[in-house]
Each structure stands twice: as C-alpha cells, then as structure tokens.
Length: 254
Image (cartoon, rainbow, N blue to C red):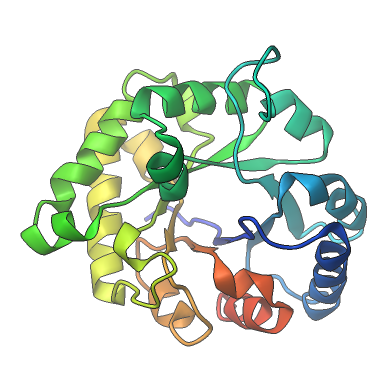
C-alpha cells in the first residue's frame, strides 16, 4: 500500500476577525512547534489571509489555504477572488465544492470542474469536497451520489490536475450537526471513493490520493477516524476555531 502523508485542514468558514485570526495562529505555532505528524492547512476567511500568511514562514509545517475561488482569472465578478490572487496572498491550498457552497450558492459539478482547473493552473492544491445528504445515506443510495459527484467534476481532467487533488469526504448530514459518521462508515466511503477513482483514472492516481474525512470532527473521535486505512486526514470545521481542540486533533495524528 502506498504510504500517504496525513493532512489535516481547518476550515474556519465565516469566523475570526483579523485580530482573532492572528491570535489563534500565534497560539497554534506554539502548540505545534514540535509537531511532525503530517501537513497542517489553515483556511481563514479572505480578509485574514494576508495577515496569517505573514505568520507562517517560520512554521513550515503549517500552510495556508483558502475556502473558495472563482475560476476566472479576472473580470467583472463582484465579490469574487481568483486563484492567482490567492496564490499571491500566500495560499498553497484551496477548498473546492464544500457542501455549503453547493447548497447555498448553487455550485454545480461543471462549475467546480472549472475551479479545479483554475486552482491547479495557478499552483494551488484543491481540497475537493464530496458527500451525501441524509436521505441518500438512509436509503442506501450514497454510493451512487458519491460516484456522480466524482464523475461530474473530475471526468476527463488531465493527470497533472488529478494528481494535485486531495479529496474530502464530508457526509452533509454530519457537518455542524454533532452527528459524525462512525469510523466504519468513513472507511467504507473512503474505500469506495478510492476504488471509483481507480476505475475512472487508474491506480497511479487512486493509490497515492489522500482522502480526508470531515463532519463534526472532535478531539474525541479524531484518532478512531485516522487509524482507518483509507482515511488520510481530516477537514475540521468548528473544532479548528479553538487552539486547544485543534491541537488535540492534530496530536492524534502522531
């Protein structure tokens, strides 16, 4: 089996002022000074990206990510931000296709495909989110839903784009609800995603592909999720807003 470096990302969503972001990052740098368990990515709101970027060169294990991007390089897209702008601000990663973007902003698989292309072209590594709603989980149709999301956004993408993608499995019914998937459910979904990627794009893409789990991740359940063979990291929401809880989650990687 391919050895895959664990990767844990904190998605701050629409939280933290610039001052609050600086305070959190300063504490995380202290807490993680000796951390060597894998990659850490912080995804603050756009307004805090530049300030956080200035704090990270002295902490190479912590990298900067953005929560979203627009696929166009520039233009009349009020309120949007391009991949090049994010790269210039210091980002190395960007979240694409989070369920909240799909749900509240109507983002389609075709639109997300364009975002993936733009991100990689600018030198960003996309964290591409997929996941099913509760009715699909309860009816047993969740594998069909996940396959559809993979095929809709990734079909026909060149190898140089696919090789940069990190998948994040986020069951929508577990995001911010306090109800997380069991480690066994997470493993089953991750194994299915890896197998589907092998079918679609070959073992050379699927085997090294890192797949994060996201959805009500806490210090209490992180370790049990991370020891699953196909869980290669975590995408953490609310628990990443507190230095103590996020550090506890990260230390479970080690």
